[in-house]
Image (cartoon, rainbow, N blue to C red):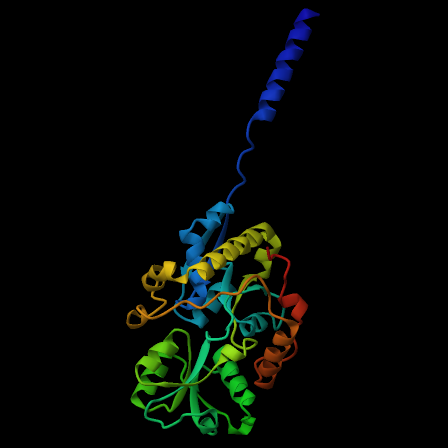
Length: 316
């Protein structure tokens, strides 16, 4: 009897000892994100530098890509889990079946901080939006740059048949042709727009007053969202903290901009990072406008449902 009682006490002590031990930490999730050398990526690098992903029990691997087509290839082949892209890219992924979802704004134009700029060559004599009527503007066709270019000119009263664009897919080529005067006008992203101005170009229009066109988004493959919802949620919590840090003191992270070749050296002394948006997703009206444009251009055979392609479910 005493032996049985003694064993029961030992068992109870062992049980209590086990219960008091700290739980083993959950296995750290890993997400791979494709990144172009663009200002939109700054919160990702800040979240890494400040160990915000680690704080949220997450490992994020940033996979550098040189071009949007390379980014598409990596996403399509499941070599990365997500990317910063545009809703046009999300639509194209989803035209046959839902493969990708946008989960948050990445960068959105704001007053005084354009994301895309229509710039005239210094030799062109172009000074106003109306001067751009029937002038070939260098763009990468079928992309957000062409979309923003047309929408900004339409907002200034130009008719569709007055808007002329020419394909100059590579941004360095576009800048060189602008600088030489061989191209009268071209559309460039921040901060390269500022570099073109420093080289003699003139900003004719930018999207700071029309944030509904030139924004970017964080997007993840649909299968990643389904299999790792908590990882996506932790990712966005980390981004939120990074955005708060940048907006509080953007100059603190200037080294990130130079080290990752996001801002060209000639601009480093004067460049200031734009304010980054708080948690939010593209609206249905923004989606519909971009989709109508893509259908009109023959890029999409039919509509792609907003509710299947954009989700607020993972915002902090």
